[in-house]
Length: 399
Figure 1 (cartoon, rainbow, N blue to C red):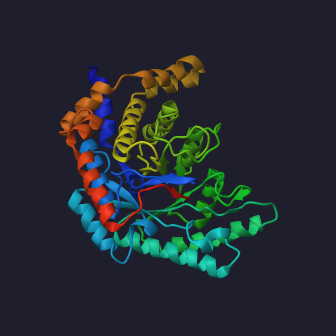
Figure 2 (figure 1 turned 45 degrees about the horizontal axis):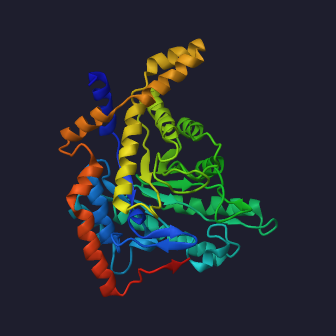
Figure 3 (figure 1 turned 180 degrees about the horizontal axis):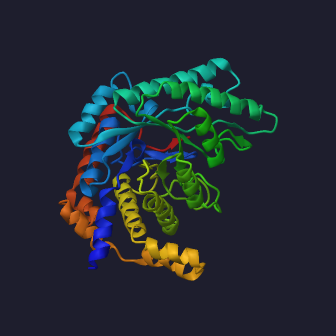
């Protein structure tokens, strides 16, 4: 095993932590229906146990993102949820308001024509910020389904102004260490115009909102031909890259497992981030988060697969020969410069990954370790029985 490769990989992995989503462990589906798995989490405490299981097998996922509407209630108060996570060896991470499920938000939330509904949306976000404070969470992520389906349905410019005003109200409520991460999406569910449709709109809103507002890049929220690493490079240079939602896509926002379609793109994204660190001497504060819908794959193995893919691609990006790359760029030697990336991407880092895991007291292959653990069989039996006791429907459900 090449000693230089091993040292680079170990150093890179020591600095990579990936937040898991609570909703990634529950039953999910498409707009056409929900698909049930017997081992899927039933409540927030199941989700915490599942996320902690992934962390124990990977030592790379110390926090779990939560959705305010789905994960908190009068019974599941923030303090109780935080205590449960701590017992399992993880913490509560980013807080996600829900501005798309309530029937009042049919015409939007922050951009809704009704001032009463806009106030309701802002109040929900202010509550989410208070929950973040109770959970000692630094990040509140804002994704809006707002937009219109038909020309003339509403004023695009007025809606922009409403977003500026309402995001500003939320920014004023942030604690000094907190960040609001503004996410963008080109379409769905709005099909004529989406209020925050691309990174430029998100950046513009972040800059107008305040210094604690950053941009969240969901790797699935782009048109197929977009150069995501260029977007990442620009946001880094503007010091407004706040975080990622990791997933992959073939057509649109497919929410597929990271790296399942284009691992080279993920590698290129990581390369831009590490290049920034190398060139500036500053490690950017980026929240790496997973946002995937495992409709067909079993939940926990799919999450482990995502995390290990991210580790491998991040490790490969760390092997780019930065000095040689820059020399070739200055010389205009395009082929040699490109090969700096290609050879790093093609480097086999399996041994270095295994040795890093061994140092951490882990099994070399987390998926194999999970398969041997018996966890899936245990929770399948327990949760199947609990669903029956609770009278929960596990048959086909329609959207």
